[in-house]
Image (cartoon, rainbow, N blue to C red; front, side, top):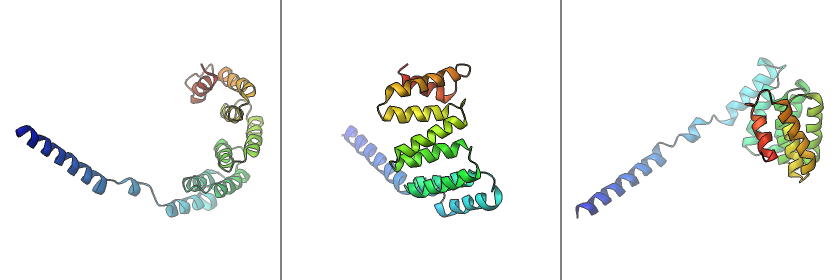
Length: 170
């Protein structure tokens, strides 16, 4: 009898705990700032705070990504490229937007431009290898991954190094 009472009390405790947790202690929606405020910050960065920097454009594009508005993200990132045509974050996010829009050819062309612009950078090589790999063009992806490994042998703690080794199957 006492074990049944104990189990019943335990069940009631867990039920009450989960009820309180999910109905009163779930602050996830309150922790994320509303997009309107973030848009205001992004526009202020673009127009007055940092007009020569692409940070405001990347922030606005991130909001569009969260809302799954990929065309709008692509458009604002293109505007950001006019401000800072060498910003690697813009390249990366613009390629991501193009892939969401299923424009693989433009994403690949942009990755090639990025590789030419920054020949010793590993991120564009990794992105291009990813594109080649997803097109099942493994023989073209492998030299890109090998180049990343060669470039980063002196700094093996770089995240791109581990990713390149993983993609090569090592």
